[in-house]
Image 1 (cartoon, helix red, strand yellow):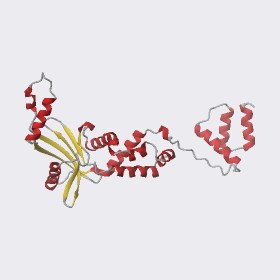
Image 2 (spheres, helix red, strand yellow; image 1 turned 90 degrees about the horizontal axis):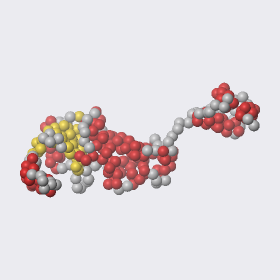
Image 3 (cartoon, rainbow, N blue to C red; image 1 turned 120 degrees about the vertical axis):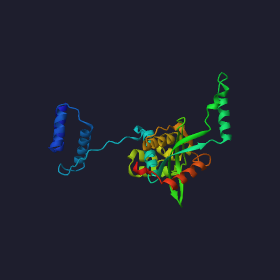
Image 4 (cartoon, rainbow, N blue to C red; image 1 turned 30 degrees about the vertical axis):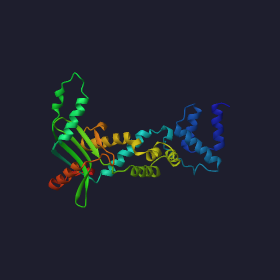
Amino acid sequence: MNLQENVQRIREMMGLITENIDDLLDKMSRGEELSKDEKDKMELYSKHIKSGGTDQDFNYEPQVDTQESNDVDYNVLIEKLLYEFINNRYKDYFYIKGVKERIIHPSILGLMKVGKSLGSSENENDDDDDDINPKELNQYIMVGYTDNGLNFPRIVAHTNLLNSEKKMWCFPNWEHYNFKRNVKSYIDTKANQSIKDLYNSNKGPLYDFGENDYKVNKPIIYKVFVKWFNDKFGESFSVEDIYGWDIGTEGTTTSQLMFFDEYVKENGFDGYIKDL
């Protein structure tokens, strides 16, 4: 049976369909390729008629393509969710921008010189460590909040105006497990079915990200965090500039906390993150 006879047979079986379907049959009779949407429409119409439906009660809504789970770039998706989460986490925090001179403690200065000398080659001058300045003139960007009259920094980033060195500290109070709950909210409200099925079977990159040890996910967290910070403040910090992060070992320092509290009490704060 040739194509024309097959199209005619479909017409006879289904009757004269709606005008749109009839147009599709004409395309088929001319040997034209149907689009995916047109093929889907023909398939659904055929099932509709075979199940006892009529032309009048046939209603076709084009199906929106969704990516299957194996086509999803999960790195991009995780970065997007992390960015949104970090932005939401800090949106009600305030920030300050200030400059403060810091005198480096002699013991720390000595360690810096020893470290530099150990990294020097034999051909370098032994007096090279004299170029280490015993003081810093830091331009700070700090993000924090007030609790019971005290002002606490949660992000500290500074640029040493004397040598352009950048350093960043963050107390990770946005918590890994809070992000896990954020992912679950995305699964429940926005994810397509294939992503949901994979996640709900306790599998896949999204599920693993919430279950992995915090340190396993650090590289992508660092990357997204620094991008978010730079976007907000027009800065150029890099992942390599992160100096302190881990609870109990690093994070913001006591001197930074004191400076932040004093600065806010004396000068107020510059604005809120949500307004940037």
